Length: 619
Image (cartoon, rainbow, N blue to C red):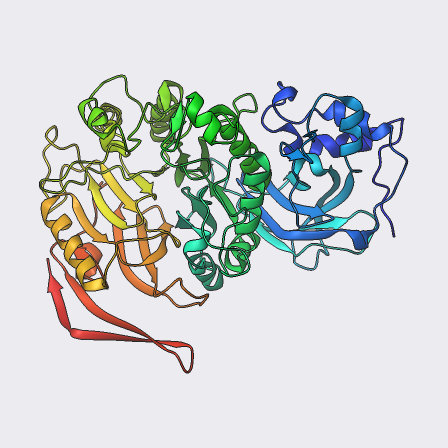
């Protein structure tokens, strides 16, 4: 059957609700429609069109389904239903005449296709024999044909299945699976996460996403940023992983197209289909080394404006943020603050997950490549902040309130490695917490002075694995042999596919060995493998399991268990013996590194993994 997809002149209430129910029409703010999508203008534009119904054969669910930001009684579900895989060109000039988006009503009406009616269903079972909620929403080219709905009236910590359908037809999306969070006062025996960061499409396949999904022993996915990269690489038609668009992205169309391309990776699509995601962005979702007034390759100058094709710093950031909220299954916690991605999710009495933005919100100037000496001189300036005063004070309140409410654990998801990592004779990076030492010291002071226990920092960005005790060097005593004096633990992960440490594994391990020896709090470092880690949280302990992909040059399901670490509740440091005394790669303080040889059998396409049990390197 054909769906009646056009608004009538009467604009019945069910249709109005259909627009309002699609959260992407409210990006970035309900209170500032001129900054996002003006729903009344869309509704007005449809009145003047000849009534027309979409034939379901014209439409496809182009990018599967996704869910995210679980609450005890609701979760966000997402899809894209469109007449083409091509993304909407919104602020791209058409035929050199004018942008599609403008305030010329007649031209706007001509550029706006009819709305598409989408039905959604949430059920307790995969066969949808026990529906919990269903409803209708509308989508148009104005939001790149995306659909983002809050599925409500759900039960805490419960698995649900969901799907979308072209209204009044049999055309249905793939079935997604999702899970709500526990209620704040629930006694929860365990929650598990897969933690990812830094997926660079042209740099390799996203095997890490698929590996955790195929094992299927987690509850949720945490993504710590660099979900996409803004730069271009490769040639379309020649390179299987060439970027689309081919160059560096600036416009809303560019960001939509790049996000859409990443979502064609089958392993990423599988992860979105099976788990509720809790993401935050790093810098590359907008541009490299961003801060409040610019990026490393685009500053607030006339010269930069011209080089970017007439896209200003603020406009580029708005384009990236709007596309991100359209394509990601994420809530806008404060619809009047379009850059706010920082938020807190309570998961029973077990934990609070505090998600930060240490990149884009209100960050003081960072290392942009040409100002490294200047950043080095102002590291200790008290006015410098990675997140701005508004977010920073909110962060400290979340830590205190979590401790006061009696949550066992506080997991802090941020972009950058928090621990001080130093190399003899080397200058510390200014684009990390090390470039904002006063901000780092304020965080440590809040934890120590308020006796906030069981805090675990999670980090990405570096394309390496790091496991450390959290220590306030030169301020609080610390015993690296026992861990006494530490105020918490940090688990930082490598990249899904972005480049790691160059060279063979043996030379990479030697670099890790030097880092572990020179940094008392650093217990393990590894920079050779791409991969991810799982966190298994219980009232008694947090266990981190690190996994590495032998290669991302091909799509394959292989992985190596690199190392396991545990922190016991109330101890605030890694359990000794760390990593059970042995890891597969990198360097482990006070432990062994088992030498593993991984080779590809080109005839069978299989991997041979040989572990030399009698060959260890001790650090």
